Amino acid sequence: QQPVQSPQAVILREGEDAVINCSSSKALYSVHWYRQKHGEAPVFLMILLKGGEQKGHDKISASFNEKKQQSSLYLTASQLSYSGTYFCGTEMDSSYKLIFGSGTRLLVRP
Amino acid sequence: DSGVTQTPKHLITATGQRVTLRCSPRSGDLSVYWYQQSLDQGLQFLIQYYNGEERAKGNILERFSAQQFPDLHSELNLSSLELGDSALYFCASSGTGARDGYTFGSGTRLTVV
Image (cartoon, rainbow over all chains, first blue to last red; front, side):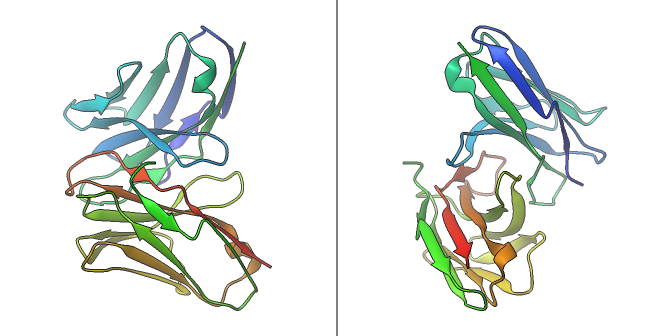
């Protein structure tokens, strides 16, 4: 039931792009994305809903493939502040449970 | 400040003891969620409350219990504590049951010695 995230870790140079993937074996209602910096609380980035509705931040984009039950988070022109662990959370219909993946560690270097 | 308040920030207690963690949700949010995060691990869903009622349960141990009060604050009670219960416990809140993002509190770091 836990979604699978890939890659587990990625190192970028400032200005490079990255894609983080999240997949589920179950039909999903929504996919959430959060970023957590070490020792801090997770911060909401993006939610993608079944049917295509999307809410999030301007500088981060994401997609949700309902047929494949996969979501991808796109980080373009990465900045040092993008460093942290990215978690996807998935929710199935009427479950009211947001189950998080194991996370993707992103490090952006100067 | 996210608007979600968790107290205490740190807690050190002995095995076998009982503790209570408190969470005040963001103003206007009716849903409260509890998550456990062990060292360098992911976020494990424990339980969710909506407007005072339990709505969903995750892998919450029988030694753990929670409730949400009429003023919407929530408490997570952990009893018969074991070393393995040491973790960061997060509370999050969200809007009126709609598909909004979660706002997390800063967490309570529990250390069982």
